[in-house]
Structures are given as structure tokens and as C-alpha cells.
Length: 425
Image 1 (tube, rainbow, N blue to C red):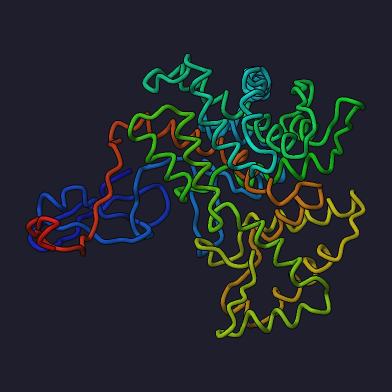
Image 2: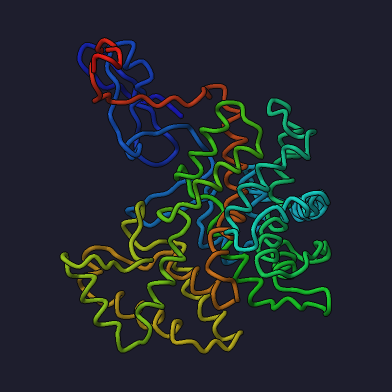
């Protein structure tokens, strides 16, 4: 971060700061002290809440970088474990560093045995995200040796534990919902392969990981690993700014991610495809999407940040076809998805409005083809995003400029008035 110039507001000068790339920002930390005024920015869409070196997004150009590396290159060439190391440590690992990191994560995959009893306190029809909120929040009651946030070693241990245990927690949430026994992790498998086995395997027979499915899910994890200061990441940072333990902070992020406007978009996209039903009905729904008086919207198209093609969706386009071919998928929903994608990408209306398919459009289709129920979609998102949350939390704790979050408000309620006794009202 460097000072580049200043801007005058009233009688006061405010420094303009530059990062390594992206828009400049006005440093208004002294604005209230100087002027007695706050800024008003609902949704914080024009406010930089922190300084970060993790992820950079240029929505207009369709750019997403993790520590400077393009997401497309990482998704095609890397692995989720390698990207996790990159986000946590700032650089890609050597072969030895990656092996050591993967080994460390694999040694933290098991949950405390008493947590199995904790699961049984939920109803069988509990949503997996409800279970994950509760279980992750409860981890601080089991791992007291990694809750001292000012100890770098404890922060590292907590980070490794969260990344390692999240697949186990998610898989157990699924198993509990379908009445199947929990499977212990198999540390001979990869991070993603282990999760697939814990989710779809049963004790009665061996489970063979399909390498195409394993690679596709690993890509989905990479594509969801971090996405700058979105709602759930900001929630993790805000919770962490109070000094809350890391498990509580990540549980807060999971709760925020559960919102349909955030983590539930891929489920909404798949539900839309099921509503369309067959390829011959696509023109009808495209016409409805163009009609301003019709409440119907094409889910999985366009993005809050990206005003160009979502770079994550480019990778998913290819992955969809790989999974369909490997699993010999035959389902009208998937035919609808492929045809809708083709028609929308060639329709001037969608091109002019830059309503391109986003990562949610493809990921829901792929996850369904693999065999995940829609209730697990957001849980998988949380699993992948945990590494980003943990990296952001670590960065925040290490920032000497960090303060407890305290947004201000534009008050529009009654002015001061005197209390009137109930008998006189």
C-alpha cells in the first residue's frame, strides 16, 4: 500500500492510497474527527474494509487472482491442497512443502469421537448447513489448545484443523441425513478422494474413487476457495475482529453463506433447470426472462461482481462435459443446461446485458450429476471456502491496523422525547 496523492474534502486533505493493482482508495479514517460526518454506503459496495494480499478480482475484465495466480491456471494445473497452501502462505509450495502440508492436513481429518453423539442430537431431516453451523461452532469446546488467537502456532494448528475436519464434518452431516453409518477418514486417499469416500462409501464394501469425479470436485473446491471480501468472508473478519476464537468465526461464516443470495445460488440454478424441464421449453423461459413484467429470472446468469464472463465458469464449462461423459449421464436437466447455455451465449439480449453463465450455473449441475442432493450444495461451498476464511482471518489477526469492526449508521428514528407513564398514554 502506497500513498499516491491526496484529495480535498471541505477544508481537509485526505490521502489517496494505491494497492499493487485495482482502484485507488481514499483514506477516510479521520473523516469523522475532521468533519463530524460519516460516509453512507449500504452494502459497503464502495468501501474497502481492509487491506489484503490474498485475492484480487476485476469484475469488468473477468479477472480472479489468488496471490497473483489466475484462477484458470490454478484450476487446470493445480490441486486444492496446493491452492490451500498458497492462500495460507503466500507462495506456491515446493514438492516437499506440498507433501508435508498434505501430510499435516491428513493427520487432522478425524473428529473427536464425542462429536458423533453431538450429531445424534439433530433431527434426521436437519439441513446439512444447520448441522455444520452447530458442529463447527462446537469445535472450540473440544480443541482448547488452538483458540489463543495471538499465538501464531495455535492459529496455524486451528487453521489446519478446520481445513482438515471440514470434509469429515460435511460427509457426516450427509450420512446422518440418509441414515447411513459414519465412515472414518482414509488418509491414504487425497483430500477430495477421501471426502467422496466418506460421503458415498459404505462399510459393507470397498469404495473406488472415480478419478474424473475426483478431479472435477477438486476443481470446484479450487474455484470456491476464496473470493475476496464477500458477505461470508466479511462476516468471518468482523467476528474475528472482536477476538472470537477461530472456530466461532468460521461458524459465523457458514451461517452467512447459508443465505440463498450467497451460497444457495447453485441450488437455485439447478431448481430453475428442473422447472424448465425439457429443451423444447427453453425459448418460453428465455422470453419470460426478457419480460420486465415477469418475475422469472434465469438463475446462474450474471454476477454481482463480474460484468464480464466469470473466469471460474470457463473452467466449469469443460468440467461439465467431462463428468457427463465419465458418468454416462442421461437426464433431461443436463440436456436443458447445455442447450440453455448455448442459446444464452448467442442471444443479443444476454450478450448486451453481459448476462453470462456463472460458476453457480455449472457447479450445481456437476454436483447433481455426481450424486449430491441439493441440500449439500452449500455445505460443499462451505467446505471449500473454509481455506479462504481461515487465510483471511489469519491475515486480519496479523494486521497491526486491525480494529474491532464498528460500522456507523444514518439514524432516521425519532428524536429525543420524554417517557410518558402508561396511565397517561
